[in-house]
Image 1 (cartoon, rainbow, N blue to C red):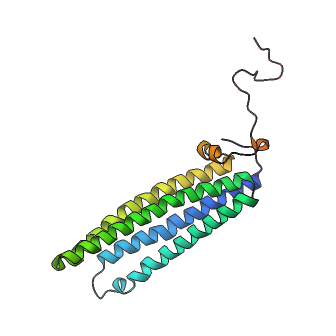
Image 2: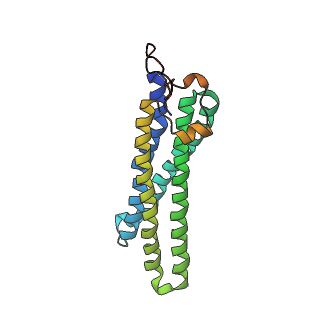
Length: 193
């Protein structure tokens, strides 16, 4: 759905998607790189000493940005213009997908840890293998959401909101762009048959 809004609101509607892109491309890629580096590090190396920090810092910063976005979306629903609030909601819907990917990754890592307890000889191998497997859905999800958010930045600059979101969160009537239907004449002087 395309709405007729000014340039300032379009820039404000871009903000949640730009924030999500920073989160995805900076903190989430660092998180995935930290997880992979922790599985490849030799014992006693610098990476092995700082592996927990390399995972905890990007994860914590990502969760902080996600939490801020959810709070900002809630506040936008009550006080910001509809178009801006709709784009905050869109960004938080995609963050829910990212949180599900986090849970799937954590479940796989937990499963690897549990299976490693059953066979002490294969303990380290099983745990590392499951960490590497857990990175795949997280990385794929980050890339898919990054593409979606990139498209949402374009939509915000065009004054567009996805139709499904507009149905769940209908716009005020004054924002709808008047477009002639197929039965109306294209210009005021045209004759109707």
